Length: 189
Image (cartoon, one colour):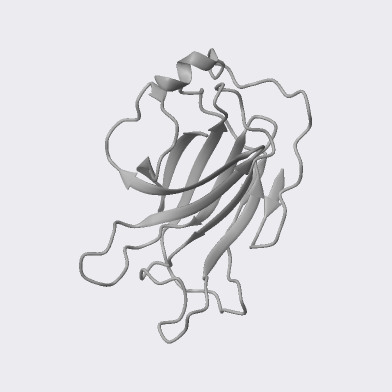
């Protein structure tokens, strides 16, 4: 298992010639309609965001795990995609209120040979101000010539059978798992 604990850590490279998870391959013309949702699976690459810029750890928060698959435009696993992930703490803050320093929760990881990674963190909160956006997790993704900035937001609807290319927001359906939360996400670059 490859683990990245905080920003600047590298999850490592995935082997070449990996086979895609069942149900992920589709012709390139299918990406306009979306890729088939891959079967659930376990990731070999794990990111556990932690404090950066000398910030102390932020206390509290419900555990959150999001199993994620990233696919390229041809619906193949995006092996070795580089991700930078950051989010607020359980009070909706990125860092101390009297500072511009970020982040209590930030990390980097590379997807495994099946285009997968697992985010193990705490559930972020909505910003503590009026009219703020819903709680979310920021992601910057690089794979080949593709750069994508997107966010996970949390929803309650069932995930669709096909997944269209990612936009600004990717909805992750969360379910209770013991004392925390668990979700699955598929992103198409």
